[in-house]
Image 1: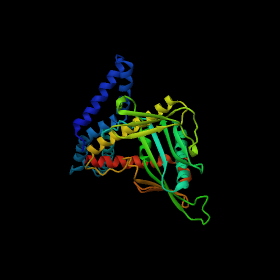
Image 2: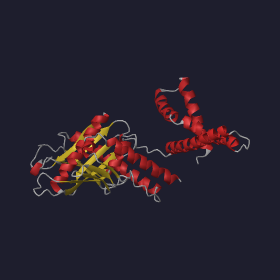
Image 3: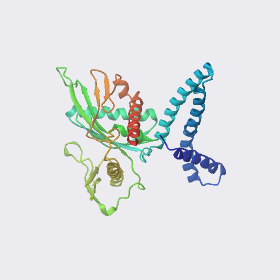
Length: 357
């Protein structure tokens, strides 16, 4: 049960914001922030009012039900109304609890996605390429902006590693469930006996940190410059444009050589480093907060096997929620990506609610 005082505070906050926004006396920045807060509360305020009125409505219906002289038809109506009232009350309570859950400040941020070929040799690099194409298609459908940061190709035309930034609305909240080990089961083109091979690729999704989120002291960085090298060690650049940035306190290191400009490589490297350091700090805080929790969805554990893509059976299975979709090709085309994400989000919310009990 949610304390009535908490619900009343929500309703009062909504009234205050409504008054402030209609007064026209707040500056542009505050107006945007308060408008967003008002819009969020607007979605829940009617449910909040109904939640508060539940007890009084229940009392009135009980009077009818307990009246020894009551008409049978009236009592039947009251029984139906009572059943509906309880169902709606449970729904309202769940919606309000979800609204009151602590918000993850990173959910509204853009994301950096890193995909690396894992076990399985060339087949793993081809699968890493398939995953990247899937995220490209999802981004196109959602009108997100995907920008390549760095890419390392394999001999077979696959990807050893690719790092990209994705910009748009609430990107991290959608993609955070993708972090982990993705496994593929299929017959490679090079397989003559028709045997199914198993390969894997790892995906890491990081919230893109801004300078205001994380201060990095220049004195904590060691920056090395070197000549960019191409396949087989051949030089692709005659100047020292490649950059390696090492964060001395943590030992985290990022190398960038995709651009011909040292300045651009440094900027890209800092973007990746800032995101990784931000994730490191978030993980530290989360582990302190949730030592007693067993919430495994959305943890971003890269070593966890989260999903299997089985080509012979045409299915994709998410092991965290035991959901199997027999529409593998549609999933890789980004057509039913939302179906998977919505199921993961719902399960994550359910687990978060159970942790509140």
